[in-house]
Length: 531
Image 1 (cartoon, rainbow, N blue to C red):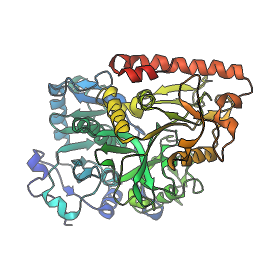
Image 2 (cartoon, rainbow, N blue to C red; image 1 turned 45 degrees about the horizontal axis):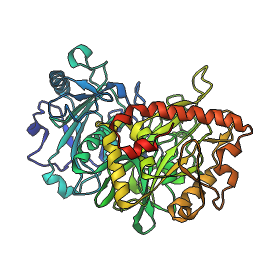
Image 3 (cartoon, one colour; image 1 turned 90 degrees about the vertical axis):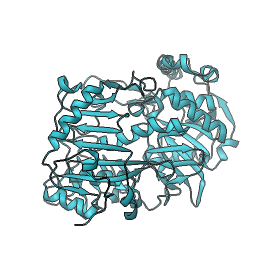
Image 4 (tube, rainbow, N blue to C red; image 1 turned 180 degrees about the horizontal axis):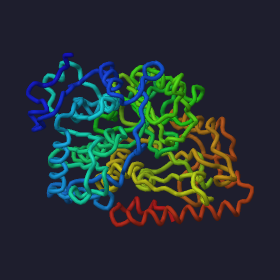
């Protein structure tokens, strides 16, 4: 089989020698063939590839390290990023190369970033063929001719079969993800969870792009049909509806997870999607559901019938984090360029299980930075014995695990972009109303869609607003298609006094969490702080 690679940049040219067979830039059919032959998984319906990742069915954030070199000492947010000593990394690198001796590997040379002037050239070396397939979906594939001169700026080596030694490698256990920004090298060992490949690249871009004045964002994005200048971005943690709400069939999908905002507008980092499949239905999300029986889609950690290969979208016995990975072109309304103009609307999604926040609120630029730094949502109880109330979660910048720099760096970049381009900012609650979790009900999806539609077409800006007495943001009094009482959360509660107590509790949570950012923020954001 003939594949393409820069003849001056083979693995040997990077000092990686003594391997078995090396497969460079295999296309999807060849990767699936190799994965099946090697017993890495099963061929599913429609040519999807069904795989289990073993003990690791999600990311291992506590096993992720940044190598502490002098050139990054003053720029890494060390409170959020565990450090690894350079000599420990060198031993890890040496031992991983020894592990690779005589084994076959799969190399994919890919772009991270749809903007050709800002993209990062990344080489991903994987022990598993299906990992090559996964990252080929999730990043952007060069044209065949572009591979002839491809020289990676960063290299990722992923060896699930390698077991790290905490004493020797300065890590926590047998699993390790180590980022050496100085050597432009990432080492992943002891985990088969494919998402580590994707998130390592995102972490890189989160470090590199702010130096160029570009805002990296853990968000989805879309634009109006046939008008890329009318774009919107959606920040949100898991479970807030980020993927569902941005995949509006009436708009063009730019991307579902990770983007940059430059002087030219927004651009997707990726070439595909990595969607959760638990409770996925053809009625609610027909196009995402259809990808699960599409040739080349990677199906991760889903229960299936061993005879018929039918997938079980409700069975979470392996994990709640079951997923599918597919290229953007699998979605009919996906943008052909993955580029958009400066967002006219910035949406911050939260799932408030306390039933306190309104379904939508308008934010000033300072309030937007406040809520961006807070990154609030709530995890709902149900899986742990004895948990009877929601668990608040504050993940700064809506993506704390992937933030190498201080949150204020990203907050100022966002505030600058919003200020320069005049985006309208909205906080949208997809959580509970009429009471907290267990008493109230989930916010009606029809109401959320109607409110978002009004925000995106500009009509919501002309509505009458009231100032929320607890949180200080503006809340619309009336919106066509949405009952007025829903817009005032206190009215949806049977006991207004109980609402007041719950609101005061949430205000205090916001205040306590934000105290860590007060020393490093500007006065206008300090004035917008809650509590």
